[in-house]
Length: 241
View 1 (cartoon, rainbow, N blue to C red):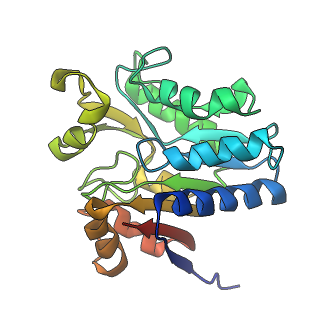
View 2 (view 1 turned 90 degrees about the vertical axis):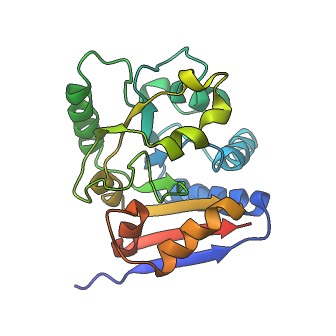
């Protein structure tokens, strides 16, 4: 049986509309499969999505009680309790507001003594869960997905990445001082992301439109990591400016 590829482009007129459409997709996923394994993202793009997810959960429109989540990444040297960690970002913006059991929430451990072992552990944990049913992504201006920077191998699994200057500048708004911006992160690899059964990518703002256009029309190349999504069987891109 030949799998048909579905690459859906949804152009929106507002950030709120993007967030609502993405939330509706995740709501439908949980309605069809309450024990779904969900891949989550951080940064500015999904903030409105999380706000809408929280509203729906508190209104009784969806439940995470049987779900499992895996985050894309975490900064090396960061962990729970650190205000600039992705652990804390997820706690503040989503986890403390919904009914997802604490034991079902997973992020890479940026404080691990052996980072390579932590990458293997995280990869095995995803595999043991049955794999990710629906993965949320943003896209960097340089085409990174997760923290897979340009040049990352398409066959990469969870790995430690050296962040580019462009990525560190983009994330500077989350830190008080430039020297506080981490230089490395643990991230799901590109092949890990591509193993998700369905993917939703969010991109909003003038600064993201060049990346969106390149994703749509550019060559599939490791110098623009998001381009590999064109080979995925089920991707929805929700974008606007």
